[in-house]
Amino acid sequence: MNFEICCAIPADHPSLAGHFPGAPVVPGVVILDEVADALAEWRLGCQLTGVRAVKFLLPLKPEQSFTICLAPANDTGMEVDFVCRIEDSTIVEGRLQINLVHSRKVTARPSGAPAFNPQPYDPRLAQWLQAYPASLFSECLYRSIELMERYSIDLTIDLLARLNVIDQLDEWRSPRKLCQVLSYQPRFSSVLDWLFKRLLETGCLEARTDGDTRAYRLRHALWQPRLAHLRAIGLDINSANAPTLDLLDRAANLYPAIARGEQNAEQGLLEPQAISLWLNYFQNENLTYAVNNWVGAVLAAERLSTRTKLRILEVGAGAGSASEILLRWFDERGLLPHIERYLITEPNAFFRRRGERKLATQYRDLPLEWGALDINSAWDSQGVNGGEFDLVYGVNVLHVSKDLLFSLNEARGALADDGWLVIGECVRPYFDQPIYPELIFQILDSFSEVDTDPEIRPNPGFLTADHWRRAFMRAGFERIEVAPQIDRIREMYSHFFTAAICGRHAVGND
Image (cartoon, rainbow, N blue to C red):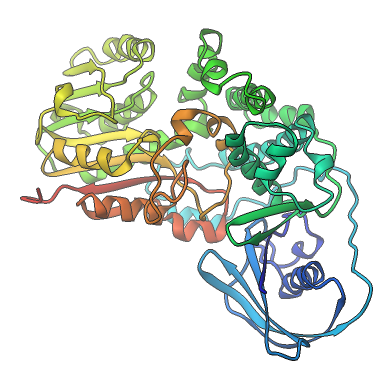
């Protein structure tokens, strides 16, 4: 019988301080320590006596999730093969020699909360981000995102305590089993699974997979969350971080009632009293969100820079923050005079009217229009004619399409020959890697109740760059590109999850 367990090396691991400054890589000996711990979990009555062979094939970054796979090497029972993988890529492989013993290795770790001390901003990122305004991907934004990632971890620890889960993790438990034990709604198991994945990178939790079931267990004591302290740091970095912190707190406070089936997230997050939270979160002063608007606008301007006329359809425009950045950037690139029509659509009437009031006043001379469009229903039945637009544009909207291929095909149908679909999205750096905005959105039905597909959307939520490429290809787009090159950036910075995806509607490709 084989054994798998997911691990991650925390960024504050003492071995990383000098290995290497500015570009930390997990030392091989630390990975082998994790392999040894995995062996102890799998074979309770054995002892590692030697490493017969080992190959280090790819580097491992701090906080990067990886899977250790163990299997008997032969029939003697005295040798074990191991493979460490990140998704489908093997980073380390080798063979262990073991002896039978009667004791089990027990590890311990102090439970004090680690200090918020992110690695310095990697200067190599500049070469991949030079197409964007210099003020965008700044040290301030970097530290803000790192703060949000850490805040979501402490918030997860706090949530698991409020959900009475921590005391259940002294033995292996699957999220589904925990929902049964605690009388939580069965559908809440996916939320618990996300919370556990969020903690894997701390090293305090471990996971193992048996067939299709993943179970978790505490490995070390969890620290006491320091939410007020981290909030103060976040506001000191940038006072505009307040809306993101507020929305994270608002969502977290709903988790216990949602788990018990007493409330749904739409009631708690979208009620009138919460509207101001969303308006503040989506505004462009909040760079942790607005960065999505910028990557989309820059790619759209680049793709349309030679067009003499521009007919634009925007979907899921919300209160207009993406429209505002697109128009601002088009103005800087000299493209505003080329706009012949700009139809801005948003199904929510309140957000649509708010965006219209602001932009209609700011751009009185532009041919701006507003309307409602449901991306999950036929677009032509809602007044969007086929072949009518040179650009279909949206920011953080298509990942919640009920049927992603349907919405992509509808977008392609709305484009003229050589027209472009450009979307800005939160893009998951690695498959199954949790990112902090999901703590807010994963409890919403519109986020989670979508059609999945093993090739393009294996589970609800944000997609990886590869998933987006495959989806665009399946929908018939050409010249597909993801920018910036998140596949390269993630090797330097695993919390970079902002990108734009584009594809062209080729001539006669219908």
